[in-house]
Image (cartoon, rainbow, N blue to C red; front, side, top):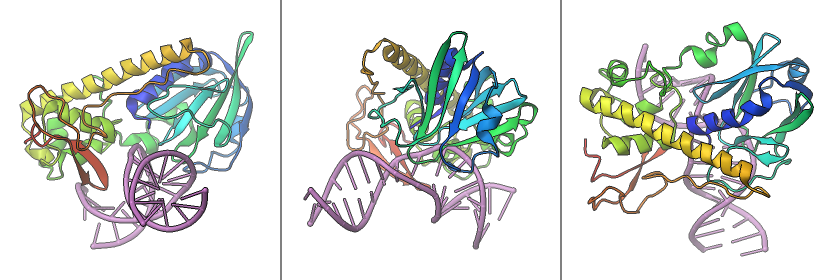
Length: 287
DNA sequence: AGGAGCACCTGGACGC
DNA sequence: TGCGTCCAGGTGCTCC
């Protein structure tokens, strides 16, 4: 399930193939994903050169020579494949490429051509084409909070954004207006590392603890990006597509298992908040 | 206005 | 084995 680190891993994997490449043979296989594709989507990509690939929160931004930016959100199960091979795989079985492939195209870079596929079984992903100068003001981006790995994200920012909030800290951190790009997994992991209870009201977390939280959010994301990088290297080195990477989490998905903290006798608990599973250690995360 | 709840979608896990 | 049920979850919508 792609969260920010997985999207960043995919970005880095696409970069050498797409940047500077001309898009050809673009094929769109259905009218919609989560939302309808833009009008004349394939025609507007055809022949364009990808100037660079950026990322904002969990969105990939392919900046095109045509003045438009091709925006892709991977949703839950969106994935790019290069020449039919999986890119940036995380703890999931190899996909059946083809069955759910909704977009395919070729990236021509000098004399080499790479076939790129986009598959998305659950179709929670979506794509857009936005004039490059209007990306920031587009509804998908206008209200987004700061990048958790950027300079604007800090304990002070959290203190300001969460002041007076009675909503619990777990659900608040999932709010993309407060910080953009955190999903369920890394919010659980970050709260665990910061020893903050997911149940506590966001506005009641003290400033020093928010400083810690901001720091561990960066750590947890950077660790995952690093792991993703090694996944990509393994993937590139692997013959026959072996070597899928099983990302390790301290609490996520570990209900009933012992807490991994030194000396803690706690057991990881699953609690549902706003319809989402929260995994946490009630012994370590007391307030 | 902020927050809660739900729709969207499919595959995998699990129980009988 | 096969069928039914539940669960995963990011975003955007509706409703209070």
